[in-house]
Length: 390
Image (tube, one colour):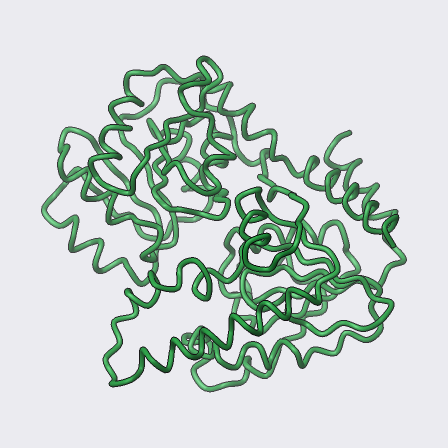
């Protein structure tokens, strides 16, 4: 079934349902927001509730047809810049949303959205991007990078995170059905919440990426928000040791100054900052390869690169195991996975990468397994299972 037909079928089946989608926050157009946009296309009648909405108008046209309700945090001092600092208040804020009058509640959650309070007769389906990583499996990593300057601040934060884990576990118990964005996340839902989850991969907008079968430029590309866990520092260190290879990095974020200092004096490494989507796609389609060093829950950028026919070098853990086919797949391989988050392991993977001939068509075919049409088809099946179970 075509994309338009599949979407029309979804819309028709649920057009009489009163639907609300609860999303953690709207600050940047990231992977979670792409899933939200796909859900809103399936439910054009849906309202959106979110803790804060600071998306610039130029980036929020896709939200225009929908009623957006924000929480009390929207009006807090300095919330636009420091909304994350209100983490201790987020559980309270999310519980204040009034969900009376809705048949279906979908929480799009990587933080607290799943903790909304629903009512008898309502279905609450949580599309879980990840259990709260800074409260669960990456707690020590986040604390290590926090660089606390005030006495006893770390003790306070640890106690806050403990209370947040307790609240998060209870909130998860109130969800009727979990949908995970990958088998990787489904396993963590099972571990931390003791709940089973169906799997529905995030969609890739295949249509906006043109397959490039022409000879490539000689640079490698990395792109992401510049935050510590994305491990752009690892990529830069690896390329500092191999000056005959070029690296371009796209993205902005709190790590930009540190990464720029790390790359200073190495003219073969370029930090391009934020780039419009059209320019990012051009850079992807012309790159020799796309490098992804994060232990990501899913990771949509490697699939977008493959949609351009560009093979990927990725850290072999987390979502990359489900999106990149390594060289053991022969002619259908779409990249190389490296075993450790270290410059040496990445350099070894680059050498393997350069010894293998990747087929752009194979990369494209892999990305097509994550299309919007398949997303909506799978969503319709999962919702049907929920209705039959009730």
